[in-house]
Length: 173
Image (cartoon, rainbow, N blue to C red; front, side, top):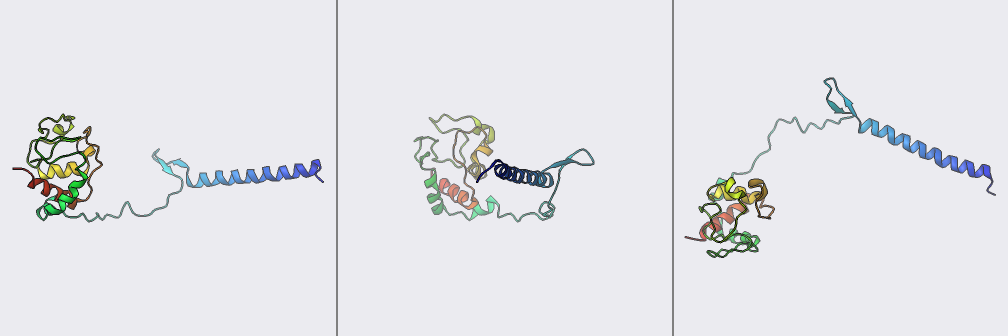
């Protein structure tokens, strides 16, 4: 049933099919993924599909600024947003946790919470916790003050930040 010639034909068929597959893969990579040197020596993609998204010339519509949102901020909603902060921060004067206390934080000098050891990165970023500085910090703590010990990833929604800062502004003197 299986003689040497039949076995050789089957093995040759598989090897031929494999070689055709590899050749097809090589041709596809050459067409779509290769890089070719352009006229000025810069490397350009071998096959480029123009989507037109880069040269649209239109700027994306930006939402309202923080100042506009802060004027209409709701401290009651900010209290609900504060629940995200509660794990590390306390509102009582002098009650530090993993983070410094937030009593009277709006308008306070940066890095002046008594009894809390700051990382030093905050004092390089700002002098006073104005609503604008707090908003920028809460949006992206690591981006605003690289090296800060605050491990929070940030609060992206401008309304949530404004409401939280309005709530924190009611806590204190």
